[in-house]
Image (cartoon, rainbow, N blue to C red; front, side):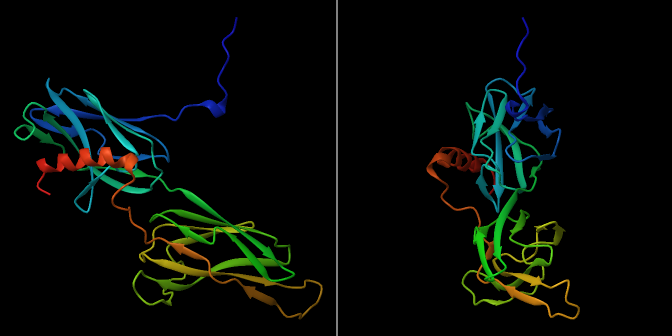
Length: 268
């Protein structure tokens, strides 16, 4: 009798493990900077902590507590597990802590700040182009992204005698009047071109609503000197201004309340 092997699609997502050592009254995070993939959970293992002491992980953003790239943080006797990765990208700073749950206001220890980097998520914008009518269909028309997120435009409807490109034209910060774009790359650092599309990546300096056009150029290869024909779209927007909303959804509120209580022991 042979054991059935799991299919490749059934492989579990690996958990990233980080050791937190308690030595001579100090907490030391062995991996103070880690990079995780989208949806990857983290387990912090606390080693050598005294009895009656509870571990904790506290993420901070602008001196406000939150739960990093996760949906919840589970605290156990000697570990903390971040589960339900939300897929948010970027750098998340945190501190590890332990406290005597019998005297939480008197006995506590903190680590030096550490950070978790979560790699970029790719969002695809499908652009259907009708060369005969010069019409465009965007899905989605407005795309809200996190700073550093990758956006890929995929063009359909082009033929071998046409090409398309993205031109950022307008910039609008919430509460201010729209103005001409000052950056060719909009919210990105660079463009990468590939067959039937292009990709914007890297985190630009401007946060706001970036209006752009898709510009299409067509030509007739069998007619020497024939004029080029061009047309462009209107209205699509890339929005990278949105920040995490407060309060968080009710499903996250319990974890957030716990984090807020922990800040009473910090000088924040």
